[in-house]
Amino acid sequence: MSSDARAHGDGVSFGPIAIPGAQVFYETSQTFALVNLKPVVPGHVLVCPRRSTPKFTDLSDEEISDLWRTVAVIQRALEREHDTSSSTLAIQDGPLAGQTVPHVHVHVLPRRVGDFARNDDVYDDLERWNADGSKALDDDRPPRSAEEMRAEADALRALF
Amino acid sequence: MSSDARAHGDGVSFGPIAIPGAQVFYETSQTFALVNLKPVVPGHVLVCPRRSTPKFTDLSDEEISDLWRTVAVIQRALEREHDTSSSTLAIQDGPLAGQTVPHVHVHVLPRRVGDFARNDDVYDDLERWNADGSKALDDDRPPRSAEEMRAEADALRALF
Image (cartoon, rainbow over all chains, first blue to last red; front, side, top):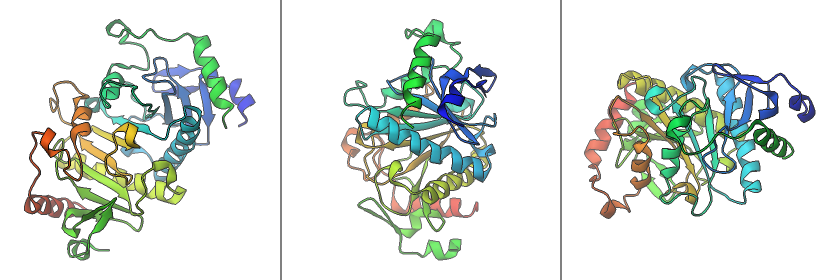
């Protein structure tokens, strides 16, 4: 699907959440990538299998391959865009690992010098982050506006 | 290669570190898995492409597929063994993301109720963890003995 088609698409299902097409910036037959309501660092995006299932271990070999090949494509573009050669890649696979949306999602976070006081404070912020915004009251990061997310997705879509 | 052959193999290269075959518990043509000198939780293992390269984005599509399909195989076995259905999966891809050994490695950590006071304290421990033991002075976890690591690898090898 072309970027233009995607920009006007019907969106995707991310667990129980309907994600507008305007927030989806990359798609393959089995994978999609979306911008965040509350990114932990600039460029923090999520890459997901199209099929909504909670566990990485539920995915087929084909889904696994497509998911992680897509992560590499997106990571390369994000590192160029954010002028870095380091990224954190993580799946919180199950509730005891901090998963809040029951749909496999790879966190891709371009890392920069000094982005966190201690390197892995990034993960504390992942913990507080919640895709559906339900932890907003516990969190001093305000959710972004739909317009801001659309603009970021448009900019990311143009990288591919 | 059979488990028996592997148990008596010549080991693998993990960046600049020579890993004895006795610490490698699973291998495919393009991927190997090893036990840890300083596991953050019981069952914390590393899954690596056979080719020693620092960046996930350096891997070929075939290496990516084999790496992550192997992660799923190992994760399923570890979750059964540790009686959980949650795992943390992470790559610290580059020095600014906390990578200490310049060879792609997926951390696989079976998670249990109460294993960390805060769920994502697990990542603080990943940060202190260092495959070659060079941060031992900053770390209150003593490195494990070769015998202990061999015994764990033997037990893991028997799961497959």
